[in-house]
Length: 488
Image (tube, rainbow, N blue to C red):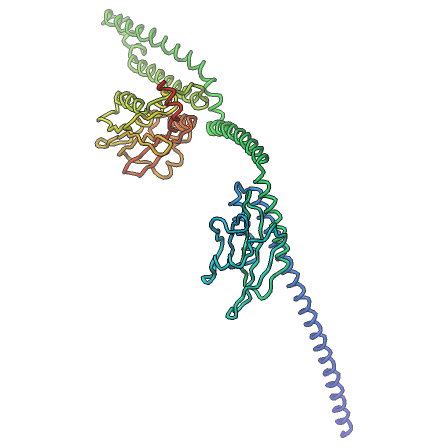
């Protein structure tokens, strides 16, 4: 019995020893795995940091290239590229200095200054402006004082700005050490700056580019005109392109047939009624009185008149469509907007909706523009009639002429119901109208906008619900040369 117990104890000891060794082995494996994982994570972090750095450099080069190719002047080019450089290298101060014959010329341009202790003149005193010739690479100089918590580095470089004037880029960077790799990137950046400045300063190349740009601008203008026409045609759809032509002939013979029916049928009915009167009491007279044509005389006359009204409305829509899609080639002449306003208000006063005088404030002097007077009157009349429709019984309409810079502006103000914000976005769209059915085609403002833009002007609207609306017709003022020619 005693021996069996000793054997059991020995067995347990051996078992514990094996488990201890297994645990130690597992712990060693776990420790090795943790070390390998840590090393792998460190390498991964380094790889991610390297990728982020390269991505940062690539983004910097992309922005730099974009700025270099799109800059329109030396100043905008240098300022934008210095801002990119300061952001890339995290500079606390960045400025542009100009020198002529080795001395400062003009005022420096500070692009960035995040430190209240940095003084522009103190930075200028550290730069050797009298160096002869271009500096090929960024110069680095430590300018820290004893009280500084970090090292402060001044980096600077020069370049030819314009003829006889050099430019200097200077940056202050707080850092224990300067990142040489970032400076190498900035060296390439400066090479691009110098190349772009050389390109901008080349008079012959600039003249060629200006000529080419003018040609492209003309092409773009023509493209915009074609796009505007295409956009209008798209808004009107198939109806705009085909309905005006297709319905003209049917409208013509429908109108002619309707007139014939009215001229032939109504007198015939009148004669039948007269005959029925003369045969009153007789069997024939009773039969005539019961005839549907005689009994429906008023209804037939009303139907024929409705037909005529419908044909006239379709004709107006057809004419409006042709006007909308037509690009006017009518000759522009010098027009005095004072006369246009007076004549148009006089015509508007003939409207059956006209209730009270329209307030007019003309321009003190002649308001001359180059325009087609008939088309401007058409636009103004349409807007004034709309204003009259929009006003209540006690509402007023006022028209005035102002000059704003190179434009004359005709303002048509009403104290009407106003236009909602939702409708304001659609009022110049073809066929959009808030009037009752049969009261408007929805083409008036679309045509008006087309006419004013063809004159190089703008048609604007400002409105407040229950307060009123103001339409502004802006037209370019006639040039002095045209006014002189007109006087001669």
